[in-house]
Length: 330
View 1 (cartoon, rainbow, N blue to C red):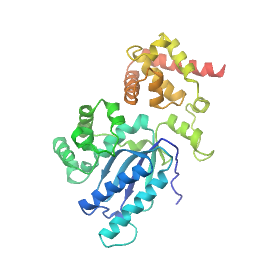
View 2 (view 1 turned 45 degrees about the vertical axis):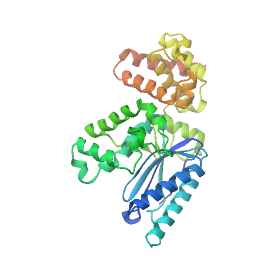
View 3 (view 1 turned 30 degrees about the vertical axis):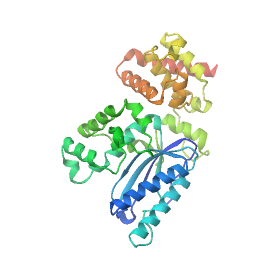
View 4 (view 1 turned 120 degrees about the vertical axis):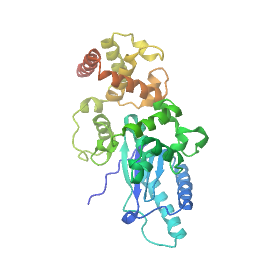
């Protein structure tokens, strides 16, 4: 069987998981879990990686990490070797602890980080007897479960230094809002975000896949992605994108740059900058008046929600796409 394609670049986000060999336990007691987190914190610091979410289950774990130095392989190799050595020594055993190599998905953080964090945090109540309980009982068990990053997301008294909470909380509007977000997931049930995985390697939409392919993957590694392919590979000048948005939306271009003005047009501008210029949400925030990552996420989220219901906005959106295309082709 071919090895999973590893896509590494500075600033990349990943969902990482490892399962126990033969589905056996990788944590037998709380000493194991505490040592695991100690070694995780140490490895994060050594390899300059950022942790956004984690959960420890009996026979597997989930991490959401960002590697600032394109070094996921080195980070995970060192971390897994260290923990395996501890586990074998502590339990007087030898041999493999994990079932093969770790699995890692490259994540489109701008569109999936928030949902992915919730899905991971719900793991402790997704299986076993708790799966059939009502949402109140599952929520109570989640709050009591100490081996995940959820406690720090819903209470500032449970924050740990080696988890970065700011980006995810900024996307939803703070700890109270995140708490409601998780409870809503328990009430209604949520779709598995991994259903959107492409090529068994990337959790992201077609635009994200196209950008990754054009920048970081050798020709032929993935099949062609037609949507926005030519536009994205050309990295359209953000000034051109903003000019086209302003023209079609009938607003002054300067309004798009002001926090308190622009309305839905700012959301359209943010989405087009993401799709057509290949900018990150942090870069978009700098262009749109110095707003933070979470504010850009909210701009895009509100715009896309309205887009499903507003026929006039749908027409404007298509006209902007066409205007950008025609401008580039001239």
